[in-house]
Structures are given as structure tokens and as C-alpha cells.
Length: 369
Image 1: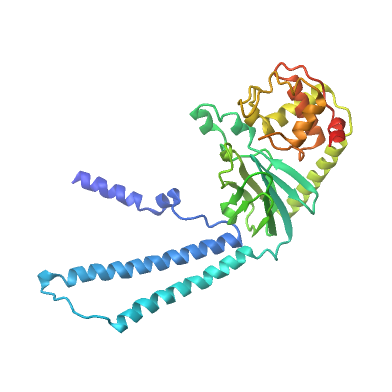
Image 2 (image 1 turned 120 degrees about the horizontal axis):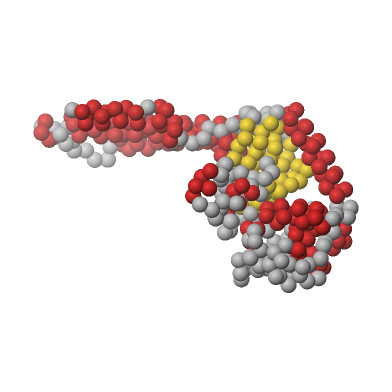
């Protein structure tokens, strides 16, 4: 009796709403009109399926119980019933049409980007995202956060303690609330996929093509997503983090980014000290280069050669700049990085890991472009 009571108690707990909510069996409702439409369509189809299941299995169970042989039931003998054939043909057609109409409305709404008030260009790179605000003149890369990079090869405990492991970035996409935003999505190398489930947006990023999507986010907050296309060995290391802020906060953020962009342009014309270049270069290297060439410069031969003792890093500066700007073999181009960033990272590569190369200034990179 005690065992039965305990079993019933466990079943009651498992059936509670809070437990089911914790498991999150249902899909995400999201925070945009698009995601609300998708969620509503999903729930409608789900409820129709439940009703059909109840009717069909209810009729089967009723027939098995009430028309069993032990009760003396005798099977009816009929053939080619026009009435029955009409019923099982017409009823499913009506059900399908009733689901197709709202589904078509949601699909049309997904593709209608004419209501957009602003545009964001999203470019996938192995393995990071580039965000461009054409109207505001803002552009930046969003990379996996250093806190996640540091524990990728660490212990299980270190990864568990890392905040938002593999789901955090160094620079977040910032968007205003209650604004229709058009996303122009493309790729610089292979096929990626920009996916934020809370927005109801999941769109392929194809090299040479621009796909679009849109969203009007109705709730301030931080939303996370991932690349949903197997895009290479570090596919799991290019997350998406979006900060949705008030329109007033967005204006302040835009002004701050525009001021930073002007400062970056000014910094590209000055002469930097070696110490400043090394300090900045280490951060740029860890963000953009360490995944392939390793943080200690040992590389992953033969595909990604070591920076330690490299003939490029210890050779003529012009050859080093040429490879970084134009790429080589599987190494992509890094033209999108600013002159000061490139000068700093190359100076770091030429003087770290025991190398004895020269210092490269931003003006050297600008001339080489």
C-alpha cells in the first residue's frame, strides 16, 4: 500500500503544470509578431490533431468494446458505400483547407519585408558574424566570448561554471524595441544560418546571395541564438546575442558607436608604440586567430601552421600583410578588420611566441590595401 501511495504521489508531481513547464516540451512563443503567428499556427494544428486522435481512437475503442464477438455482434457486410467514401474524402479536405488558410497567411507575413523601418546586414564568416547598420554607418564583428574560448579545452566543471558557455559573444547586436527591422543575410565563405528562435527568424546565409527576413520585437531583453548550419570545424563556436533596448537607449548606443568609429579612423593615422600594438594585438589575435593558430602560437599543422618560429611572422612585413589582407588556401581574408586592428595583430604575431619580427603601423596596412 505504501508503494502504491508513493507511486501515485510521484505521478501527481510529474503531471503538475510546473514540472511540464520546466521540461519546456512546447515550442517557444517568442517576442515578435512573426513568432506569435508561427506559435498560433502550431497550436491550432496541434489541437486539430488532438481532436482527430480523440475521435478516431475513441471510435476504435468504442467499436472494440461494444461490438465484440462475446456480446454476439455480427459484422456488417457492405461494399462500395458511396456515402462512406464521400465522408472520408470530403472531411479531410475541409480540415486541410481550414489549416491551409491560416498557414498561408503566416507564410506570406514571413516574407513581407515591406513594413521595415530599418535594415541590418548580417554576414556569416567562419566562425563569427558581421553586423552592418547601413543608415547609421556602424559595422562590427561579433565573436565567441573569450570566457568561453578559455574553457573549451578545460574541465567539465570549468565549462559548467562559464556564464552562457558557447552562447556569449564579445559584441552584441543591439536593436530598438517596437521597430520593424529587415535582416539582410549573406555569407562571406560557406553556408551559415542565422537563427534566433525568440524572433521566429531562421534564414540561410549563402555566399553570393542575400536572403531577407524581418521582425518587430515587442519586449526589451537579451535573446540568444546560434548558427544552425554545419559550417565547419568550429560550427558550434559562433553564437548570436541580441540586446533589445528602448528607442532612447538605442539612439544613445548609436551615438556612442559612431564616436568610436571616428576614433578608430583617427587611430589609424597615428604612430603607435610597440607596447600599445602588442596589448591590442593580443586581444585581436585571441578573438580572430587563436581558434586556428592556437593561443600559444603552436598552430594545428598541416592545415594551420604555427605562428611560433613562422617564416612569415619573422620575414618581410609586406609578405605578412599580403597574406592577412588577401588570405591563403583555407585562411580567409581579413580586409574587414580596421587598419589599427590588423597592424596590432600582425605586430603581436611578429613579436610574441619568441618571434623577432618588426613592428607594423596602421599606415603600413593602409598603404598595402
